[in-house]
Every structure is written in structure tokens, then in C-alpha cells.
Image 1 (cartoon, rainbow, N blue to C red):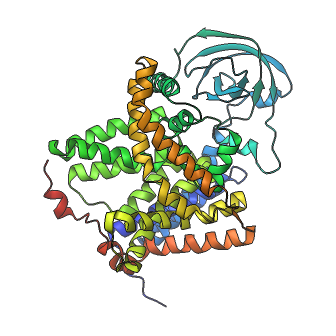
Image 2 (cartoon, rainbow, N blue to C red):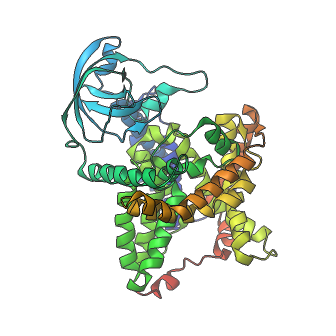
Image 3 (tube, helix red, strand yellow):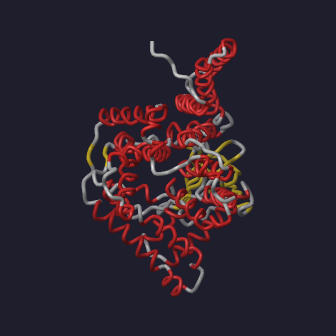
Length: 497
């Protein structure tokens, strides 16, 4: 047998986080959580009795599965609405999500004493987060589509019931319920979105709302198709990339006041930004990780980036196991992040002899690493992936920070007279127009079809590489310690406080 090396504290923590995440990911409500809980207690006792770390690791894995089963099951226990499908009931509740305004309807989650439901109303009916409503409607079960499990999608939000176009809809109180921070964020987002609508034309204002505010809007079908075929659909929504841009901007703006000022400002900005995007999973994960990084920098302590990634994944899994099990946005965001962390150092070594003039090489290897990592997910979920995605992202991603900056300026000046607001919005219009043209040009190329078998094999290969890179000392020694970024504690200590 091969001798098991003695693990450092950081390596033990990483193993624990990976095992916890696997347990949270595998837990299904159809299993018996009591059995896994009982087994975990047995292994906890054995690990303490023999003082064995590996037995403790098994106990953590079983306990994580038990917790995931309990959360997934318990989240739906209080739902009385699903017991009364096809019945017409009078209900009272409040809007507990940011409304999703579409061309044909307006929809939002409503929390009632009997449980959560998805309320669908006409596009002319205004809904706001925190509105208290009273309405009469028919309770229906969500319908699955041929290629989309809509029931499973809604279960992520604890929803099993839909009420479509209710009768006698009455607003009992306006924006008076729910979380105060979310109410403030929703109102701010609505104001900023209105300013974008005044100053920018369609579809530029819709894209700006998605990039900057996380507002979900329906684009013209042809435009949406071009972004999908060109591999740029991820740029239409807020993601971890946007969070990174915010942290970098704050760091540059406040660096003269020291790292603790940067930490506090970043923390406040991330909290409000996450709230304003409606607690989207990729933004939540990226903000959590960014906050941890900022905290470690503020304290002047080194934190292994691998541990930070898995910690953020575990925290989100504890918050909502079903989300990490079913949310494709979370999968794509996490795979892209892992791809950048583990792929960039490898690519840096491969392309070491190529000049990095104007930062082109860095942009290339970051885009290449992220695109390769998400290809298996795209292949499995969509049956294809864009062959031009790497090239389109190379051209489009540098525009994102500029588009965010120019769009943010528009949100602050959109209340001015329309002529002046439109003039100020010209840089934002140009940047967004270039993005649209990139999507249009590359969107003419047919995506490459991928079979389920190829998608599964490629996913296994990528995950095995991530697992090896996460646990291998040789990988850390060869790649991570020789990357372009120095996270050493000594360097952090030398920074101004």
C-alpha cells in the first residue's frame, strides 16, 4: 500500500469542504435521512474513539447527506397549497421576490400563510417586492415541458403551486412587507432601471439592466438567439465577473486609505449589490468568496484560494441544497471559476514564451480556461456548445467593465432632461452596440452538437482534473506557487493598513 502523507491543516480543511459539498449535492429527499444520520453518529463515535481523521471525514459526508435530505424535505413541509390543486381559493400574502416583467405577463413569488406560490398576472399589473396582496385564483400544478423540468426549477424556490391571472387582485399595502434591505434595493433598482429606459433605446437598455442590475428582461428572440449561438449569453446577466469588477474598482478607488477601508467598502457594496440582484446564486457565491478574500487581505492573512472556492460552495449548499443540485447558473458559474483558478496557471506555463503585450495573453488564457470548463455543462444541458465562444468572449469580455461603468453613469444621470440624458448615454450606447454586433457576427455560426455520452465523458474528465488540482501537492508546487499573483502573508503584511 502507498503511505498516506501527513496532511496540513489547510489540506484537511479542503478535504472536509469537498466532502461536505459532495454530501450536500448528493442528498435527495426521496432517501431516508434518519439512516444517514444514524450512520454519521456511529462514525463520529469511531473517529473520536480511534482519533482517526478519515473516519471523521466519512462521518462528515454522511452528516452532510442527512442535512441535505432534511433541508430539501423540510422546506416543503409547510406547503398546504399543493394539497388543493384545481381549487379556487381566496388568498392573502406578500410579494417575496423581485417581479419578473415579461412581454406577455408579469410574475412573482408570493408568500402566504399556506405556503409559496408563483403568481402570474397581466403585463399591465404592477407588482413590487413587499406588496401585500389579496386575490382569488385557481391553484394549479406547474407543467413540465418537453426539454425543461419546470416543476424541479420552481422547487428551488420552494414553489409547488401556480396561480394564473387571479380575480379581484387587491393591493392591501404597498412595499410594506418583507426584508427592509431588499425593499430598499428593489426600489433603488426600479429607479435605476427607469433611468436606463429613458436614456437608452431597445435592446440596449435591456442589456444594460441585465449586466448592471441583474434585471431579467426578455430580449427580441433574434437577439437572444445570437447571444446564445455566439456563447455570450452569460454576459446578459449579473455573474461573478461583475462582482470581481466591483471589488477591483473599489480597491483602486480606496487603496490610499488602506486595506481595511477597502474591506469595509467592498463588504457594504457586495451586500447591497447581492440584494439588488435578488440574491442570485452565482452572484451570492462570487460575493461570498470576494468578501472572504477581502476579509483575509484586511487581516493580513493568507487564505488558499482553493479553500475559499469550496467554502463559498458549501455555504450556499447549506443555505439551499436544492440550488447546488439543480441550478444550471450555479453550475456554470462554479465551473468557470474552477476553470480559471486551476486552468490559468497551467495555461500560463504552456504559453510562457508568448508575450503578454497589452494583456492579450492574460485575456486569452482566462477566457480559454473558463470556456473549456463550462463546455461539458453546455453540452449536457443544451446538447451543443458554441465553437466560436472563445473568440467571441475574447472580443466581448473586455467591454463588460466599460459597459458597467458607462451604464452606471446613465443610471445616475437618467433623471435629467431627456436630451441631456441621451447625450451622456452615448458612450454606453456605443459600448453596448459593439457588444450587439459581436453577438450578431459570431451568432451566424452554427453551434456544435454534442451527445449525452460525450457530455458526460468530458464532464468526468474535467471534474477529475479539478479534484486532482484541488488535492495535489505537486500541482500546487508546480503551478499555483509560480503563478503571477503572490498571495504570501509577508506581502500582505507589507501593505498599508
